Amino acid sequence: MFMVKEEFTNIKNLFRVRLKTAKSGYIAFALVFTGLLLIPLINNIIDIIRNNTRPYNIVSDLSGFILFGVIIGLIISVIIYRTANAKLSVFPQTNNSRLISSLLINYFTVVMILVMILVMYMVNLGVFKLMSAFSYDIVFALNINYKFIITGFFVYLAYGFLLVSLVEFIGAVLRKWTYYAAIILTALFALFIVNFEKVLGSLPGALAFLIAEPSLLLFFLKATGLWLAITTITLVVNRYTVFYKSHNQILKKGVVITCIIVAAIVIIIPGTLFEVSYSSGDVLENDGTFFIDEHDYVSIEEFTIDISHLQSGSRVDIDGTNIYIMQSDSWIWQTNGSAIVSNAESLYSIHGDTIVIWYRPAWFLINGIEVLKYTNQQLSVHLEGNTLFLNYSYDNVHVMLLPIWSLARQFDSFKDMGVLSANVLGFSSGGNRTTNIWIEVE
Image (cartoon, rainbow, N blue to C red; front, side, top):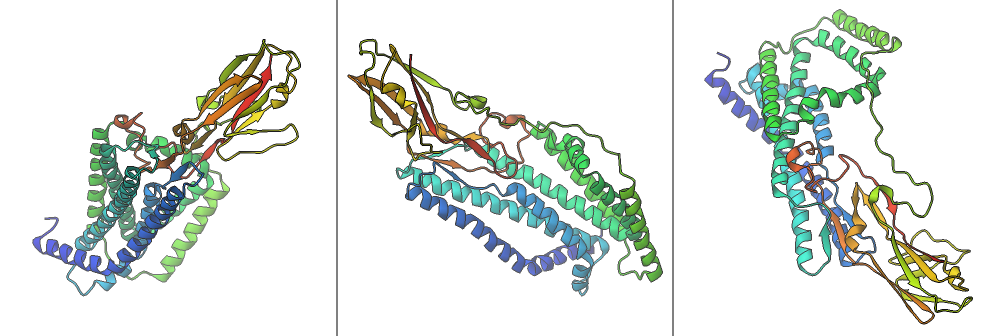
């Protein structure tokens, strides 16, 4: 029999003790998380109330980074596994009960972290929804889809549980076959260092069966099956692990020397195990000309005004709202809420029958989202006598970027729903935040 009734009791008691021991750590983590929630939230609220000129507000998605933090935490738990068990030695226990209680506390930690991320998201969403109800012009650049929010939670839960099981499996192998495992891991680590870019480039392909699975049902079936398989193997390996075994010092030194030799051989003889070809992706380019419509983020609008009735050499003045007339000897990078009018000198002495006006609105990408499209930029033009009126207008809105579960982007059911930004991790921005008006006389 793999487990007896007493072991279930031991597991329950050990889990309770581990939970009690970790209480202070959970409280500290919750306080840090609360700070990560409140500081950006308060800053965004102040920006909106003060009507900050920046048209967008960002709330970072911590869910991707948290998974990397979970990996680090799990590695630490494996390193201190025996030390932690030594503190619990006064309680009845077996190899099985020690490992299973460790698995349970790690699963509990993953659930707690994901719940806190979800709470953080819902608090932000609730606050900004409430502010939008009180006449603050807030628009959400990403669609709020509650099915995605709930599904993403369980997707991350699957990834988190898999990480726990995988790291615990490695820990069990290290405890069972310490010396052999140390030598093998040293060789693998050296290969990884030597072939760093190739290994990273090949990982998506190797894990595509899971991380690129487009079907939600198949993903959960694969993740559950893999999790059960790894956990079962870990329990089997761990059942025959002998703890607190004395080790010969000469043998220890021999293993260390062997690890050094293995690492040196792998590093000196460059590894060629991984061959991968990949594209660096699309690069946003600008050839410097005025009429660049990059990736269709904005379009150029053309206006024509008949001036055949005006005498050649006449002067046409410019007037209007929210415009800045740029002189030939000056240049500015951007204006606050104004459109830059270029080549106004062509109207000082007209020689032609038509005024041609080209208008390009400002555009700016944040994590692949064109935020300025929500400002509804408009230009109206008309001629009264010898005065050309240019009236530029826009909606003074605050565009809210509120992403969550950015890694859960592989599924067909959420394609083209506008729930995800372009970036899985990190931040990117670019564009032209200047509204341009170019004038010529033909």
